[in-house]
Length: 401
Image 1: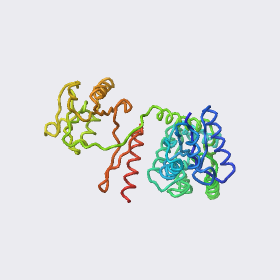
Image 2: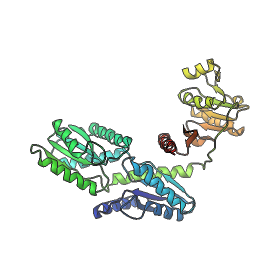
Image 3: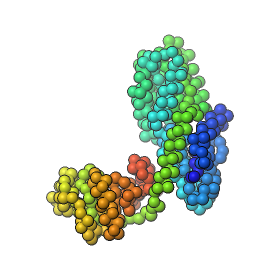
Image 4: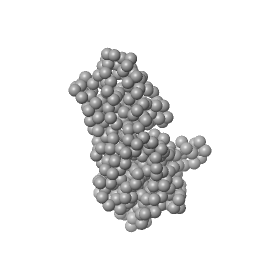
């Protein structure tokens, strides 16, 4: 089976290294027959690039899956790990690596965090316990915002008196500032939850800073919870990331990225609802001779037809509607109709996009963005939100060239 590379941050502390390797062993136990390699961004070995090369070399199909062992989507997830993957592939002049999403706000990890809080709180009732939910902190505002949203989910799921979010570095408020906020809200029984995966220097900083703050507030008690650690919940999330990526890689076709010149060429859209409304603008910008077939249409498409910018045939789609078409899009809310349109298009050798089932069509629509006279497209990931985020990152990078 396809090898799995678990890409962790890394630490020099023996207890952190041991916890990470214990987690890797748990994953191995859950994936019998799968080669599981651990690798690190820094401070430990092997490097991610080395592990990727190793995984590709030993896989007959030259394919590997990399799961970032990261809770948030900071610089390591967005830049360091992808760069290391590219370096590992370059050593072999190619190979196919599927890079999964980070671990994110998975409900199993939230449950593990609540368990750590409960263990630290001891006999304190949740309704009388204030929580300082402590993140790593980074220079990316959206990553810090994700941590704040996660804190809100923790408040609603845990039934605590209060949840204040803070960061151990880079972002604000820091731990002392977050403790001040919890105190000003009336918190006198406070649990600090370091939202990290393994013990390390960040956990030590949290313990020291919490102790320093508590020494200056004799009427409040602060208890620091354990980190998530090498638990079954964390291992199960990693396994799910791997299985989803490995399954998609086996099922997904190999793609060839190209750009279509559609000016004055007939393009047929089956369906005229919300999805079709999002697609027509760029097709019209490309100069396509646009034909929409649907019994009813959104106000936007109806107005475009009234203005003579596209042709709308107000009925169910038929095979004859594809006559003379260069490109087709099956965007109805009926999987059966979309499948039929795709089959007609296949018979006529017309590339066709299916909104409900990408693999059921012969073309996929990329997430695109334009800057500086260039068009950037991201395609091949069945998670449209992730593709859109990747597009935004790519556009920002191109803008700086």
